[in-house]
Image (tube, rainbow, N blue to C red; front, side, top):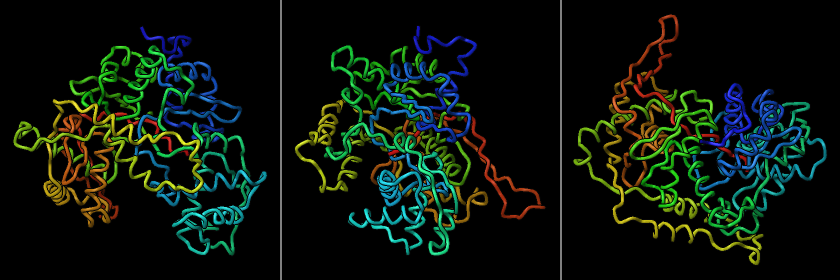
Amino acid sequence: MSRVAEGVSPLELADYQKAVRLVLRHPLITSGYPDRAALATVRRWADQLRTDLMDVLGYRLVTTADTARLQRAQDGLDATRPALTRAGRPFDRRRYAYLVLTLAALGRHGAQVALGELADAVAADAVRIDGLGLDTARKPDRDAFVDAVTWLTERGALTLADGSATAWAGDPERAEALYDIDREILLAVHHPTRVLQHLTSVTALLDSSGALGMSASRAAQRRDQARRARRLVLENPVAYYADADTELLGQLRAPALAEDLERLTGLTVERRAEGVALVDTSGRLSDLRFPGGGTVAQAALLLAARISAAVQRSGRHALDLLPAPTAAERLAARARRIDAALPSRGLIAGLAEPDQESAYEASGDEGEAPGETRYPFVTDSWLRGRLKEITAEYGAGFAADLRGDPDRLLGQALDLLAAMSLITRVDGGALALPLLARYRGVTARVKTRTAAQPPAQTALFADDPAADTVNETAKDPTP
């Protein structure tokens, strides 16, 4: 029997699980973010949350009078967890750089700061970074900087006291904004578990037994593997057995994993022959819903149905079967791309940790099984053809800019399917993964709005026979 939530009565279990989902969905909670009731909900259950989140997942919950901060243990590098701009678009590298430099600059100011003054401080640091810079005379630079400031404002680290950041971005000569600085929230936003100057690879930021002060005994190693397995199921749309090493595979198959996660979150763990998924039908834990609204999500759903149908018709034999990159190989590839941009200046070589990338590459070679799993392969040209069919049939419900740019729409649709672990993108096409079969048989219709509304106001509605949302939880873009 699971020991999760031992101190919670059956009558209060649903309220406790709501608090769990809240803190997993929003790793930083303040008096105003994500709403005014959230902090009180988490603080009510703080002691039990601290115990369960550490025991089950290896996560540390730090609470103060005005903040609750979940310090996650990271097992991989995930490109699907971005900070978002004011327009809801993912941060680019320039915005991330401005965000980090803004945090550093705020540490040198008092209780208040003017936006123009803060921009000048960030610009003075940015000019020393090759290829960055911040020129307040350029509108794109001002917009990127205001996106970083707004991200902090939404979380309460900065509070607008006077003026308008949008007006300043439009014309800094005629407008200004004044902010109050909350030191406690700033500390909660940026609380690294490593000394960044000591790292030679981004993989050194990932979880290890020493990161949370755990011992390296055999019992501790088994406990860490169990936590890692639960994190894998919680944080991803699906945990495939074929992608797990021997020790992790045993933990994924253990009955205790489902018992602990279901009691902790209130969601349902679904087991299939190929893996394990945590199913969130409410959408209250997932930060990325699929199926979902919008042109990209609808095109991705219809494309998923066509790929799945092709696999079913072929019986998995007419299509080429290729191996998917292992988790270690994917991690090593991402690490190489990130490490290529690491600055060498300021690195304290004498304190640097050993190169982590080579260790992950080695583990990928050792873990390669002789009977590797192979998946149906569809080519880029086949995918383009199917998207052309979809656009011809349902394009009236698509956004005009994406309908007129099929390559961009295809790329974004495939990125979404890959983020949901439905496909793996490889050179020349994509591999169909087992979870894709969940969306077999999807049909759709274009629904046109009433004649009283503009004729362009159309929408695409997918009739999905398996509309449960597979969980991809609580992405934490805080630096």
